Length: 95
Image 1 (spheres, rainbow, N blue to C red):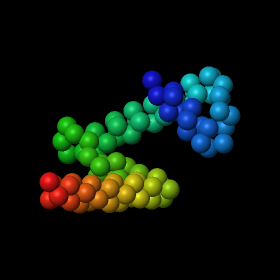
Image 2 (image 1 turned 60 degrees about the vertical axis):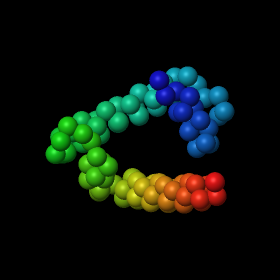
Image 3 (image 1 turned 45 degrees about the vertical axis):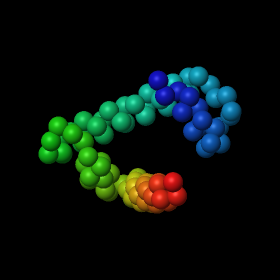
Image 4 (image 1 turned 90 degrees about the horizontal axis):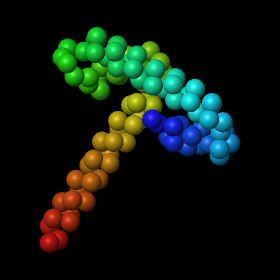
């Protein structure tokens, strides 16, 4: 399912360029299990039938590393959104 991404991440973190398939499969299984558990918990704490970013932030709030990384990625996402908007406005005006 996500084995190609897992392979790339493993290599990026110092593993062999071609890690054992068993290692990739195990890591993929752990990632999927984690995502499923987090999703179930998010559905329980959320107020609707949709998962929000706030639900995820609430669930990871006590894990400093994950919380910091999520905040960093959300900030980066907002900066990219603003840059795209500014670029689109300049492109639109120059037509």
